[in-house]
Length: 459
Image (cartoon, rainbow, N blue to C red; front, top):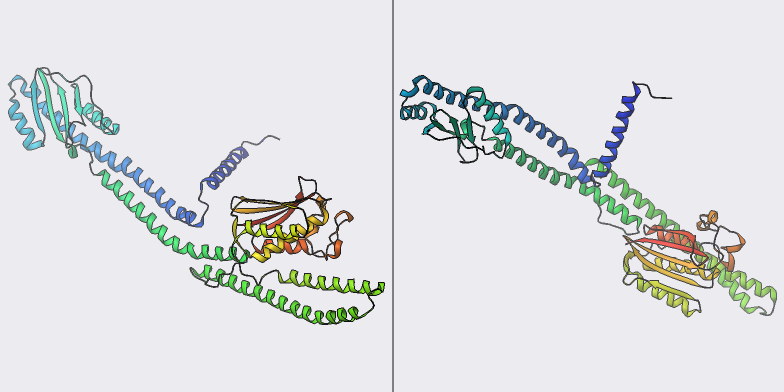
């Protein structure tokens, strides 16, 4: 169905509006300070531009035309006097009359001819104004020079016996104080911009501090010195953030304390069971199975506690990740595992070292469990550090990769998380650590044929 004539202009207007919005999104400042200054300053600049246009179109141009009209009329009067007296005219008396009554300097140069080319001024509007007014009052050929002298305008009129030269002060022909108005606009606009910048910077600074505190909290970096500041709404947001942060810390502390107590209470009977089993006949198959179960319960208990604790008790600090990965790889190589390390030199970030060590260990443990060859890579990618672990094992199907991060989740037989006595918390703990640092972990296909685990950390 074709558009009706009434709807077509509306559609064109909507398309134009969308294009303008897209253009504004591309050119508008990204920061709050820049956008706030733009919101305040842009209307003022538009107002000043309209005032400038009005001044030049109405006041400046109108007054300049009136002044040029008066000057052209006075010159026309001199020419009428010359025509009235004819050959009997006394040019010296006429010059004195022009100087005394008209404030014009007139001089007649007998036998002279007007120059062939008229010089143009820097502003052609002045030339056009004066040329138009002279043409309205004078029928003889004329010539004028706006550039020869700074304070005067020279005008020449061709007569039968020579050229009448007239010098008029520039301020009698044109408005010469227009630059004062422009200077006022520029100075006032600059002053407004400086005041707006200083004022808005103080208003935006508390918001920036709040954003930085929230970002650092997401990375596990606490800022105890952070206090609400700024406008009332910003203070309310900062206070709400502090209360939320305190509630999260209390929840984590209570959870850790509770599980630490449970761990302590369970370790005592497990220890007694281990002692009793040690005194039993070690050749009994039932005793051996029971010992294995008790040891597995101990490992499960430690892994539960580590998952709940989330390494929150450790303080973040600037860490050389290259050295940390060297130590992790060396420890696993000493255990007889095959791991290849390829890391950039001097990779640094503010992290909790032991937490990152545990996250990388969990990824490597998962890789060496299912693959024969494991490659650990670390690179700086823009403002982030990317750590990848590749193996040549069976991998994980794409639709099950999100499930692999869920605690205690069993996968398919090809890559069972519970193999080797694990309770399925390795990847969950690793992702929890990564996200506590403001990063994340993702799984994908590895170029070596197995699974690739990618750990992203902000610098």
